[in-house]
Amino acid sequence: MEELFTTKQVQGLLKVDRTTIYRMLNDGRLTGIKVGNQWRFSSVEVSNLIAGVKTQAEKGSRISAEVLPLHCIQPVQGVFAEIAEIGAVTTNKDGEPLTKISNSCDFCNLMLASESGFQACVNSWQQLARQSEYSPQFIECHAGLKYARARIELGGELAAMLVAGQFYEQPPDREKEASRIKYLAQTHNIDLEALATAVTNIHLLDERKQVQIGDWLQRVAHTFEEIGTERAELMNRLKRIAEMTSIN
Image (cartoon, rainbow, N blue to C red; front, side):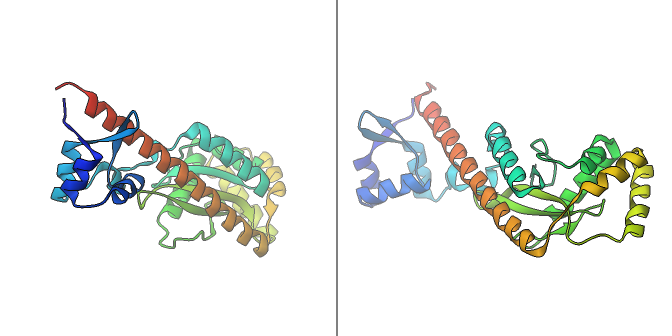
């Protein structure tokens, strides 16, 4: 069984006071387990810390979107989409959907029901993933609607995105819109009449509303970051407990 150090032993090895030990526990530089009212620390982890080897908690790039609890993310995403009156989906960092799309409009539902239409939507989300700007920037998707994304960072690295949109920012030119709808219907094998009817119900959002949605988008994404980070830390602590209590 791996040797466990007391807090006093770790203080002596690292040449720090007790307060610093607790601070290191809080920020993830050090992990430990509680035995009664006393902390115990892995001798291997402490040795690695002395040698300058990063702990798992410090290796941000290893925290992936897999730690996001989708059963929690989905309802929060749904409430946000309904309040903002837009469609929303959470994707991985490459634009591949992780959740079901919330509050999707009839037009987009017809598009997403088509295999090629769905892939075209994913391609649009992937375009958002390639944006260099940190803050949400609305762009036009393949079907002519507006979308933006907020970054979900875990461990300081992009792990996922919250994508929201499905609206016009200004009234479309009817002739150009009719031509686009016809093209989309033919390209993705969608009923033209149904698509033409659905497009009339797409929301029109002004610049003020877009700014507001961009702000909400980032706030919800930050909430997802907190949920993911806390879950990753919990999983890491459970892993360390299992490692410390295992018999070689």
